Amino acid sequence: MYLEYFGLREKPFSITADPSFLYLSPQHQEAMSHMLYGIQERKGFVEITGEVGTGKTTLCKAVLRQLQNETRTALILNSNLSELQLLQTMIQDFGLNPMKNDRFSLFNQLNHFLLDQAESGNNIVVLIDEAQNLSIRLLEQIRMISNLETDKEKLIQIVLIGQPQLRDKLARPDLEQLRQRIAVRCIIDPLNTTDTANYIKHRVTTAGSDDIKWTDASIERIHSISKGIPRMINQICDRCLLAGYIYKTHDMTPDIVQRSYLELTGQAQEPETVEASLE
Image (tube, rainbow, N blue to C red; front, side, top):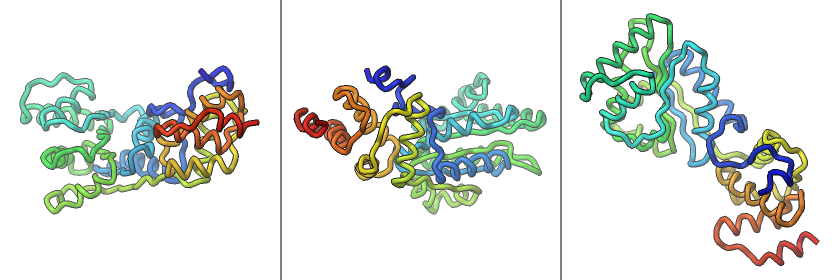
């Protein structure tokens, strides 16, 4: 509804994981550098953790765009899989047809594929999102897959991306062998107030407009109620733009931010309250 009014090409605050809208805060840049380093230097295991909505999946997709042509990847977004399903999904993502329906055969098929790719000079990467949901048995299978290597290098790089519970799970004594194999770790924290302002500006500019004004007080309010979580920032700002369209203003005032937040939480105040504040 509001795109034409604000001169936007597309919605700047969609909650889909679109890497073209990725804002690289210092910590997101650090996480991306860690991921690329672990993959390109063939470190075997990389662990990236952060709270819900901090942009882990978006960052993951952005990393995929930066990998070189000799890198072949599998992106697993559903971590609620059986051991057999994980192997099948990995093999299919690499463009192969699972030859048989048992783990031993699939493991051998994957091993032959990795050896062939190594001979061709290719680097193989598996990125597993929502990795905190992986069962202990599945994590142990992933460790066994990581054991596939030559005398000089790892045949497969595995990036585990998940919520803080992933760190807790990997701290279990029965996962000691896996934990010792993780060579690169990084934590993505929520945005601070300055990065919240830069994040909002970046997304609006990327969507094609520089004519939407956010006051310092509005930014501080957005940061306070979102706790710096990008997904929550998106939801609040999307409501703010809708309110701006309804009240025919390009100024995103604290009153508009407050009303947008109340609407999101089912506590919307009467429209007259906002209208009065805009007069």
